[in-house]
Length: 110
Image (cartoon, rainbow, N blue to C red; front, side, top):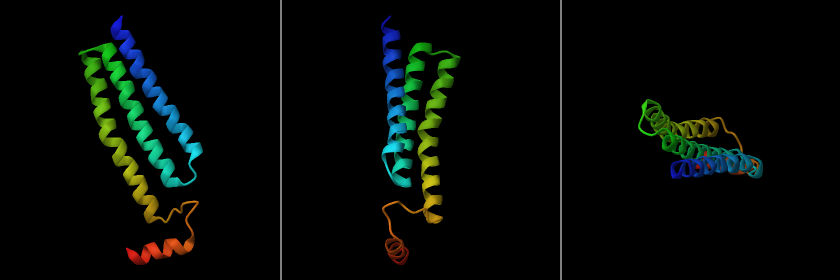
């Protein structure tokens, strides 16, 4: 009984963080802020959902696979977000609040 409650708390918390990250995409204006919100929300939401599922399954084959998915998400999510961010910066994806003059000054400083 208490195991199901703990499982439900983790799953609801994970769903909450994923939903908040989706709302953040609509709330923020520029590409980089949206990318940051989605990266953090997706990673945290997935980890919490995986913890909830692991509490439900326990130390079985399925539970170990869930832990592996959680670990891969913890490492793969931030790396993927960083790669997308780096490519967008190199391709000169502009923020909605950034002007062309500011972008030229950044290129000179680098």
